[in-house]
Image (cartoon, rainbow, N blue to C red):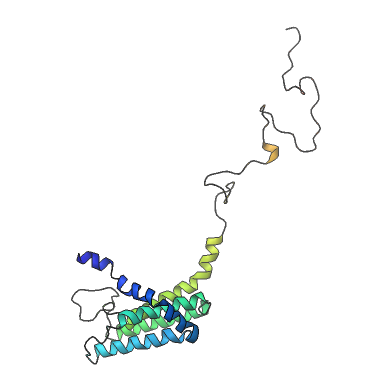
Length: 209
């Protein structure tokens, strides 16, 4: 039973995000990228309340706030506010923040749950985990256009019709086709052959037989 709960942990964040999508999208239409910035600040305040002020359940809201911040980046990408230049900024800021928080800060290097650890980056989610998500989103934005061009390239061996069935070869050009009697078809504009037996398609019999 515990293994099943571990495998379905994401539903605890995914289902509330789906339910909050309409109001969060309305906030995005009004305030744009300011929404994930404010959510990131709230995540940092939750970490401070839990790690430095020892507030009971101080970072519990980060289970929702951190993933909502990442969810808002999807809105910004969809309406064109996040492109490759913003991807560079996200990647650099995320990596720098991640290195700083895990070396000079109290956050562990591991981004997965570690049983018995005093501080974890996933339970509840921390600012360090948000920095990792921002860096990954930036890398995806940088690779988006290049990956799209690579996927749109025509692929397949020579003689294979990309729009046809797999392994179906293109029909040979007309000069290479054969007639029903096994002879090459004449080119367009070529006068019909003349001579004994050519009109009927039968091999002329020799004389004397």
